[in-house]
Image 1: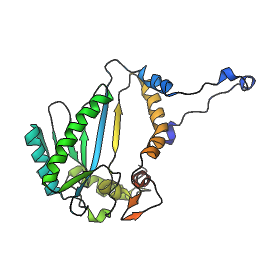
Image 2 (image 1 turned 30 degrees about the vertical axis):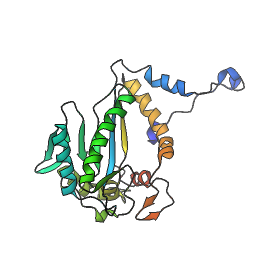
Image 3 (image 1 turned 120 degrees about the horizontal axis):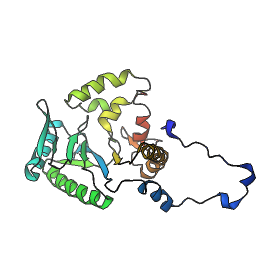
Image 4 (image 1 turned 120 degrees about the vertical axis):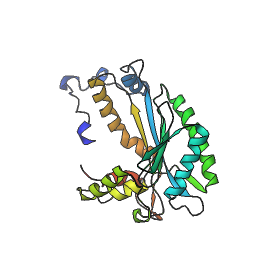
Length: 247
């Protein structure tokens, strides 16, 4: 993130006191900044994760139960199951939308690209509503929270997926990786994918979103609890990513 900070603007001394030199930044300016440079066929993508917890005690739901929910969902939605060897790791439709499991059985919904946010909201809501109805049958809740609030990473079993095994063996050996197992097993979040029209456009967008991401995180923090303790961190999820490995 530090590598993409905006350079200090060059201010000519003789114009420093000229009011015409300054301009108040408005939300319309920000919208124009990236929307005007996007292609007409540009789209937005979203990856949305939630914690899979037992409704009875709030502990992490086991793989066997969550995989049954995925199977149930795939049958009534006519989606294809996705496997890693013999392990069910998700399901997908024929348009590019998927649901998948993270290392601690967190459930992720990855939408196909859409042109506008209203379509994202509509299609995401349909999937969430269906999954939530099914999960009740299995005494599971999908919690939209940044970090598992009550368990340690050692209490959450790692999903039997080859890539996660590699991550689990590699990350702890990196520098500043004290919380990598917490990241893998306990956290959930959202990622936004945005098209770009050129190398310059990609560079400007990357700088822009890296600059605003701390403010977005600050506005949306919802993970002050960790290991059944109300911590000093407003967002333990953000803190975890500072200690997941500098590599």
